[in-house]
Image (cartoon, rainbow, N blue to C red; front, side, top):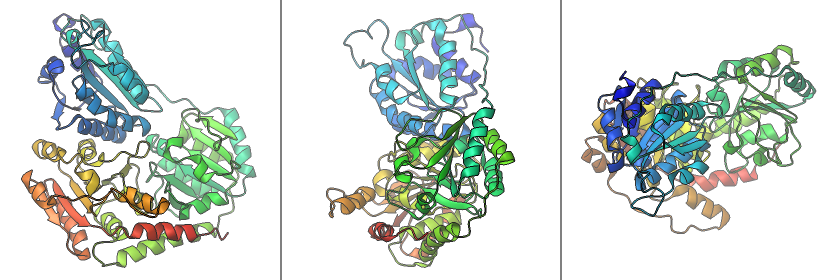
Length: 551
């Protein structure tokens, strides 16, 4: 490590990042961050030069989500910083630890109307847990340490640090601070006692497992709890995989825009045990419309206030410890013999029909089933926002946490292609697939060049229908007609090849699975263009609208 007397703020900043254990920074150089970029040249950190700051923020977002360590993205001031904001907001709402670092104009002109000067702190504060500007060189170690500590502490999220151009070049006779990791507190015995009373009085309890359960690595404890007490488990879109979908107590995933099969588990539930559930994942009004269910909230933090989320008891602290403590003393329930066959029978019927459908263009159910067949249990699929998200979230079975990644809180399009780069760097030995609509693919397809240049290999499966499919779906549901959602596409195979990647076009249903397997084995980036028949969208919502609760 360089001695303090030899450092300017740019060099000190990089040493602080190394001290935090940062391995990758995703970003772009600019005139006002030249010294930070130069300091990175001799560091242990791998700088991933991107083609858009938005791409950099999504890479950091997904890297942070998968590792639990803050992903770092870097931009210059003004337009560069603004371009970072989408991925920063996505990380904030989906509880991914992220640190955004941007340049800023010098202190000698930041206070007045000046070229490319905007108030970045005021822009970033509403979409982060903390944002501030380094104005005193000696404050750099404290502010970097705070940015990481705040980003990585429960509930995780984004922080932002601005570095003025003149401060960047100033000398600073200080060194990075030692790290300290906050430890989760133990749950209160009094809260646990109250939770046991509610559980013991429950007639039809159901567990709702969210993203916080995944962040706390509670899978084994959740399985023990469910098995011992004979309580079924539903996951949110963000919680997919935290409870394996092939477990006898698994009821599937909740979060669809209509009353889905899984909702039956909540229709008759009198007690809901919310395990690491954040309200942004799926509004409680959708599963507790009358506000009459008793709710036990297990989380590291105090629950958000909502008229449909009034707690019978909140247990704050280690979720794993809370589950094990409750399982040790609560009275087991009589195993339900009707709910699981009903819910899973309806879903399995849909899955089996999809598997057997050889029509072309492919039905979305068939595409989901072929993806599941091609991917291993630990492999990672990123399901982009749009109609594709609804089909993947509902039908793609997960057996391990964070193996089906969805932008849920912000629900932003085009996160999955750059996100796949972050996922592959986080888990280089796993196969990674970005499942995207053709609408979202072209929003960030320039990062294919980044992936090829940096030799970060994954597969992009583009569902092709030449529409903004989810918007069309909702227009047809609410208005009975679509408007302004149709577009045309380039030749995706030629586009892939122009980057030096491999391109595939699916011309029959039977071609998809072998093509997926081939592409996932290729040691390169591959793009697969697969036509999809989204006439299934309205068929699904019409079918769900006709379902009634038979129990």
